[in-house]
Length: 160
Picture 1 (cartoon, rainbow, N blue to C red):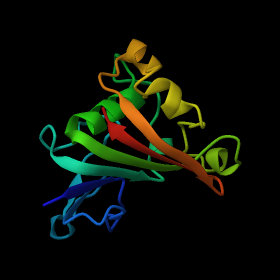
Picture 2 (cartoon, rainbow, N blue to C red; picture 1 turned 90 degrees about the vertical axis):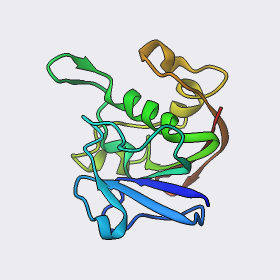
Picture 3 (cartoon, one colour; picture 1 turned 60 degrees about the vertical axis):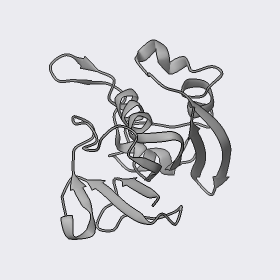
Picture 4 (spheres, rainbow, N blue to C red; picture 1 turned 45 degrees about the horizontal axis):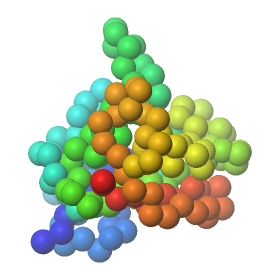
C-alpha cells in the first residue's frame, strides 16, 4: 500500500502519484481528511522515518523562510528539506511545484519569502553537488526531471 504526504495541503491533500493512502500537513488539522497540523517552519513533520513513497509540495516551499531566529539561527528551508528526506522511503519521490525566479509570481505574494530558481535543487540538494550540506542538509536527491509550467518550476526528485 503506497502512501503520499502533501505539504501545505490546505483543505484537501493532492494525490499526484495516485497513492493508496494520502495524508496532508497544514497549519490546521482535519483528521477526518487525514490532515495533520504542523507549522513546518518551526516543527518537524509528525511522521516516522521512511513512512512515505511520495511527498508533494505544491505552492508551499516559497512560504518557508531560508533563515529564522528562534532565538538562535535556524535554516528553516534546509530543515524542511531534511524532514522530507527523512520521511521518504528509499527511492521515494518528492515533487515540488513552486513559482520561481525570474517570474513575477515568485515575488508578487508578500508571503513568498523563499525564492526558488531552476538551480536551487540541482545545485544544493542533488546527488552530485549537494551544496546544501554546508548548511546542514543530511541527504541527497537524484533530480529526475525539472521543467516549467508557466511561472511554476516543477521538479521531480528521488531520495538517494
